Image (tube, rainbow, N blue to C red; front, side, top):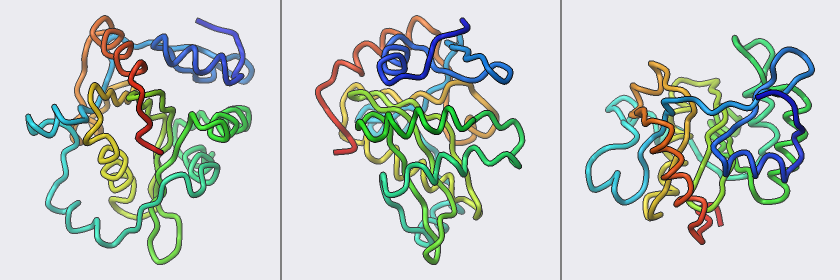
Length: 202
């Protein structure tokens, strides 16, 4: 689906319907709903079954090197994710402005990873109830983006009916524990997640 705008109401309505935006060409906005959909299992059920984010031994050794913050510098994380020197970049200034506005309204959040006082990794996305849509992440130090995911998924450890959407399954995400579910299952879980009266970022 093409067209529309990136106003807060449009974005929130889209995410609650299972859609997310990405630019198509220079001027058009495309709205996507992949089938199957990639998710990272989170919440009490993931902890109980041992599914969810895979934390390797090497990553466990790296974690103490970093400091994690939440919503400390959302725009810096988003602009690092949109660095034009990165391959397959898609985050335009229009998207930065739209999601910074969503962040200011309390619907978009970031996790920042710091090393020796410098921002070296992070992840950002949209949160509605027990639902989180991971949009993009970056790293400037080995394991920094993975450390951001560790901290982020930990925010949902005690959140019932949580759903962590990562859009498409890539080999990298699969190695971290992401799995695919079909669209109908995703939409069922999404409806339950967004209806939960919780805010993991509060």
